[in-house]
Amino acid sequence: MLNINEEPGTQENRPQYKDLVAVRLYCNNCRSSMPVREYLLLILPDGYLYEYRCTYCGEVLGDKKVSLQQQDKLLF
Image 1: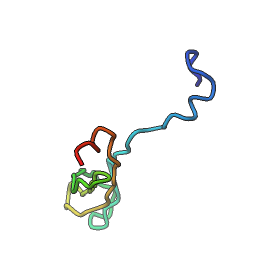
Image 2: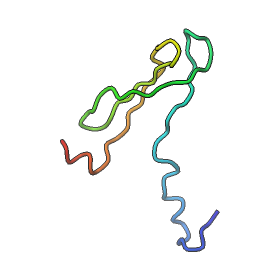
Image 3: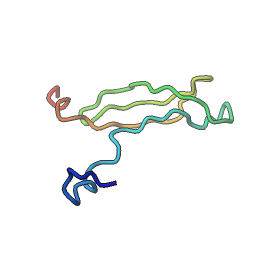
């Protein structure tokens, strides 16, 4: 849907989302899609490393890396 106040063609250049957060992932131990919690593992020079764990058994189900924002890069 095109906003009347926008210039044509600017909508394609905007990102669709900022960050995805998993709510449920498949757990091999539980043999089902289970709710997960996101834990911050490391703060790296180029981003944050998160880990997803099953809320029932604690099994690590995945991870994700989020790039640093411009204001966060001032810390390094």
